[in-house]
Amino acid sequence: MILNSDELEILNYLESWNGKLVTLVQICRSAGGRKKYRESPDWACRLMHRLVETNLVEVDERGRYRLVMEEESGLVGDDYFPAPRDPEFWPENLW
Image (cartoon, rainbow, N blue to C red; front, side, top):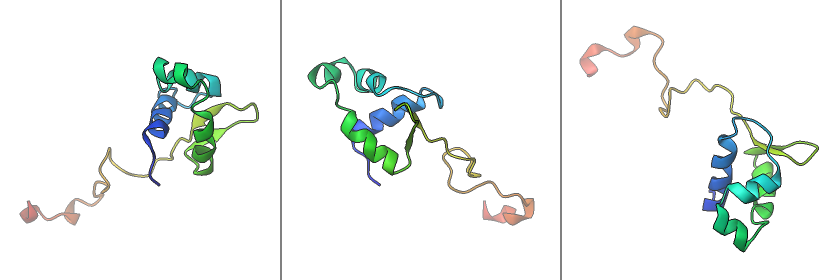
């Protein structure tokens, strides 16, 4: 899925809350900055539905949002290849 810059701003903002629930008003006010909020106070409303549908964001019964926390996937940092568990897996002469 390709995200636009507004959706990325929302995800980054929610990530900063470390799994805490945030109201839509807070997201609209803070995620895009003051200028965006002044120009369109409800700018994030139209984007939240898509983020919820794609399971990037979850919403509770009171309409508060939070980033879906990923389970531990075995990835090491940003590396897509986990460290080998067996030291003989990688022969020394490859390096």
